[in-house]
Length: 95
Image 1 (tube, rainbow, N blue to C red):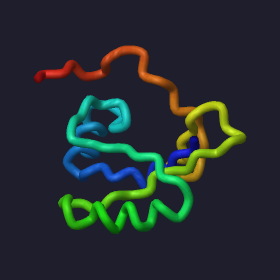
Image 2 (cartoon, rainbow, N blue to C red):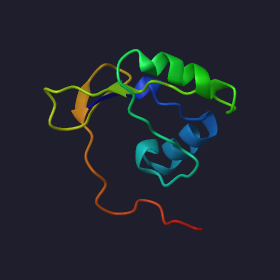
Image 3 (cartoon, rainbow, N blue to C red):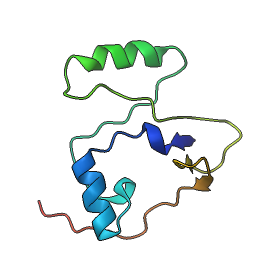
């Protein structure tokens, strides 16, 4: 799977807080998010269907590629890196 960091919707308040605290928004505990894997052209109709129910429209943040054995992330500056699995909690869950 190849993710595009610029396509991941992160609010400005969250991005700012993560920068101040030195955290990566992809590893911060959060709730109310849904990730779906949709084949081919179905992604367009899926995004269109989800738009009316949320404040922010759904986004396509990456693609699944058969030649990849790991999840990679293309950064804002275009550098691709392996997105490691989180091994421990970076932020304690409060709920």
